[in-house]
Structures are given as structure tokens and as C-alpha cells.
Amino acid sequence: MSGRRVTATLVGQYEHALEARNRLFIPARFREHLAARRAVLTLGLDGCLFLYPETAWGTLTARLRQQADSTPDMRAFVRVFFSHAFPVELDRQGRILIPQTLLGLAGIRREAVIIGVNDRVEIWGRERWAAYRRRAQGTYMTTAKRLAVNI
Image 1 (cartoon, one colour):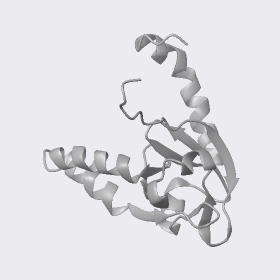
Image 2 (cartoon, rainbow, N blue to C red):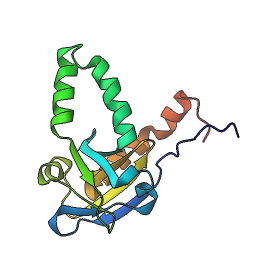
Image 3 (cartoon, helix red, strand yellow):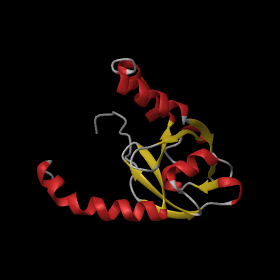
């Protein structure tokens, strides 16, 4: 080992019900990546929410800052992305509070699917995740071949 710190990748899928007051349990494997139990929750892509550990959020915002005013589309994206961002803290039970606005935008009613996607956690409404997964499954192998990934 070279002494470099290797950042673990967020992977896996879990299902949890939304609790009272819009609280959602974050699995222990994902909580390990949340320094000081803090993260940033925002509107994601494809109908889900993105939950970024503070370090990943910092990296992303630095990249966005470089391009924020480059085109009208980029300005619009940055405005929407940041206007829906909320700092969150995990409570003692490992739950976060999800604002009602974000629940509505992500179609999360009662059941949520929480997945690890490299440097972030995605939170999906169960029905929306099932529909998305069915669509994505159709291109999974062709995309893997295009990326030259042996699975």
C-alpha cells in the first residue's frame, strides 16, 4: 500500500419507509461516509434526490463554480440545483429530515429506495425506482460493452 487514503465507493440498495415528520433512515453503510453526520440533500436527476457527503459536495460545487455562468442552460441548471439544496444532519437514530418540497419533486410518498452511486446516495420513491430500473435494464449490457466493461 502506498500510504494514500482510498475513498470507499458508495454501493448497495436498501428500502425504508418514510417515518413521521418526513424522516428517513440512512443505512449504516452510507452513514460511514457522512463526516460529522452532515450532508447536503438536493434534487437529483431522473426523478430522485441526491445526498452528498460534505466532501463530495465540496468537490462538485468547485466543478460547478468553474462553469456556472458559461451558458444560459448552465446558469439555469445551477440555479435549480442549488435552490433545492438543503444541508441535513443525521439524528441519533441515523435519520435525515427531507423537506416536503423535495419529497414531492421525487415522488416519494411512503416507501423509499436508497442506493449508493459512487460518491453520493440517491433516494428514490419505490415506484419511480422500479420503473427507472426496468428502463435502464434494457440498455445495461449495450452500455457496458460500449464502455468496454467486462461484467
